[in-house]
Length: 155
Image 1 (cartoon, one colour):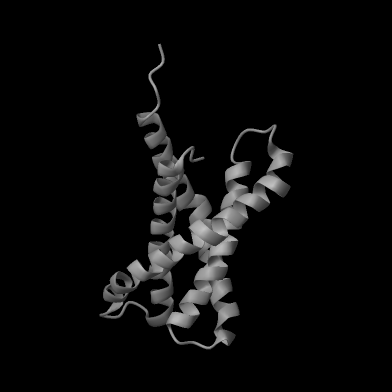
Image 2 (cartoon, rainbow, N blue to C red):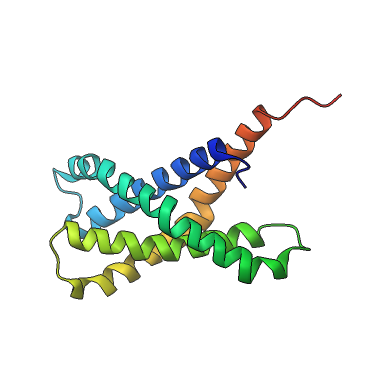
């Protein structure tokens, strides 16, 4: 877990950056397949989606997920080691971010809100395993390296 603002920012950039990239590729593929303009669409849409994701993560979903996790769920796991706490927070984060970013995707692409439930479900089907199996472990490994690199030397 991040211990200070710098680590929180690095961790959020890794998580949001990789998740937005993966989910952008997935959603553009679902919408148009591997057409000639596929990678152009990914590159053009990535920055705005990343900014929206960072705002949602930093100001809404992240604080809410952590509050829920540490107030209601994590106290049961405090005596245990392992991945229960990060998996709990990751799952809550995915649920919140899929909710926000699916709405963003539906609106930015000019679809009606009736497309939202399907978008939400399809995004959840990829986002949860991608977060738990790929992006979360990568971001935690990078964070551990950052924390190890700045750890004070022991005598």
